[in-house]
Length: 379
Ligand code: IPM
Ligand code: MG
Image (cartoon, rainbow, N blue to C red; front, side):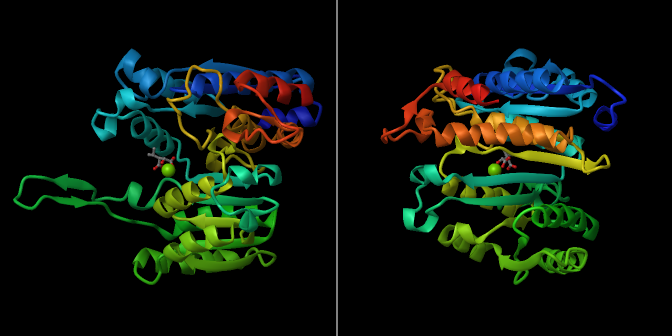
């Protein structure tokens, strides 16, 4: 990050950033190639160097090395400035014990190891793509743009005790939801900062009518709110939020949620947005100063094994994840924004992969590399 500050100050002519590239399974490698092409173009245009270190992860790593997150992969991530992640999982590995499966065996340890507590999941529905949403046109006419901010390293995912006891006549499973005030504070700051930089409205999600966690969550978010007088804060119980978000997604700006609730609501928002192939995400650790973070960036959509290897997957989610990487890990705001505008321009021109193609007049269907070509041409 210092590299970028020095670059902007003119002290350094050609900064180099190290990116660990974990393409994973299914469509991961195909969409990752398109993101790589976009990053290469940005690099040559902006006079920056990206050093890519490709490593195995997920099912591909299980097959080759017996673990979803081999040591060599973790070491490459440690040596990098950011992680660009594809997607992991597929039918081949579904019968493994849950903790060894690609998704859990790779993602949860990466989040915990790097302290990636802040998960940003933009749920954006472009005006021209509302047809891809299962929600009625009258509800999402004009599209919407909601940012889900999910706490990612605490709550019921990681709280102790956590165990399953199958020995007795009536087996028992225990998961524990634990939040410290400090954990709620830091994610609340991320959410308020994001809201302050966009629509200035924050909706905080909890279950304060039942859970002690909800009480602490709500009072902590209220106290953090005092630092952000320009942001309008409201609260929703998670069950009500599940209804309100689908009833009127356009009514929301930033939504802040504890780990499990954020997992669920961000999937709901992704579905309402229409195509999973369009949605990026960032998982960020502590700030390194100047608004820059170590982070892992990945599409929201998963490995889509049915489409893998056919060259039909939508690479936009991966490309937009690379844009988020440039913004949050490298401070390259202009470059990030130029990728986002290129994507928007291509969609406005009617270029569509199969997941968002309806055959409407003025649109043309392309494959994965066709979409990559169209985006590159706009850069
Ligand atoms: C997600 C996924 C993961 C989660 C799974 C694969 C462990 O659903 O990133 O939302 O529950 O966090
Ligand atoms: Mg999920």
